[in-house]
Image (tube, rainbow, N blue to C red; front, side):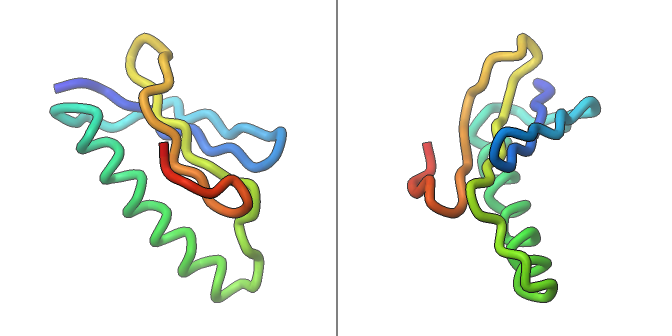
Length: 78
């Protein structure tokens, strides 16, 4: 198992995940981030605050970004 961190970026502001979550590999961490986006979108719809120019940056234990899950004008999942 490996620990992955889900750092949240909105514009120039970054909220760093200091706890992380344990997954067997990066693909499972990526899947979790996509599910987290679903939750975030529901909250955004209820509050009327669309998460423009936001993304989850998934980092491994070494601090390396292994995936980026964007939303808003950034477009596609990397």
